[in-house]
Length: 208
Ligand code: SF4
Image (cartoon, rainbow, N blue to C red; front, top):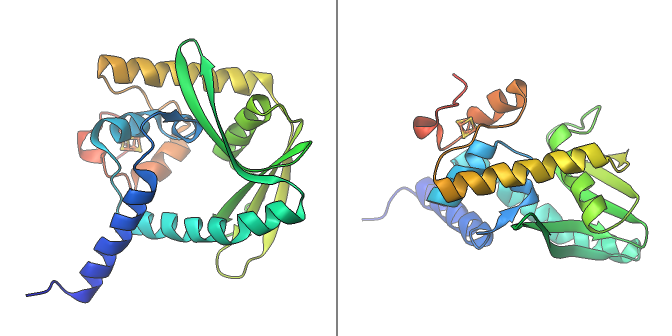
């Protein structure tokens, strides 16, 4: 007896997303620009996706796969450039969407084009600017339903870079000591993330 087809589709999507993103066991910069508690749980218990999050990740992945290679070629750059940055015995994985001689581009799909870039996206591209030694970052938002685009420029901030490095140490220590760290994000962002977080039942910082 088969399960209902919508459940089978949901399972297929979640399986695909987990297989695509599961290999990442090291700390990545994206773990540091979101809720640190969530990143700790992800490292400890593996990725858990709700249906909504899995769909969101899946379509973001499609957009990346389709657009990045072509856009990189048109910009005379390379796409999905990876490295490991080490700081105080903490290894941090970094994967920039597109790198050219002087600039870095990050592509973000969204429901609505934001008026300002999101702080966690600024922090992420700022990290890449230091790691890959470039002076200008571009965060490209692309609307999922009509492909409208908005681009924001980001210039390097050493304070923000140090803040990201400090969070890497906090997360590494938390993993080593097996104790959830504080989220280290603003309350409004935490409230947003908590709404669809699969770890909320075991989380001491769940924003109810
Ligand atoms: S429930 Fe909220 S605070 Fe806790 S891990 Fe999830 S997003 Fe972070």
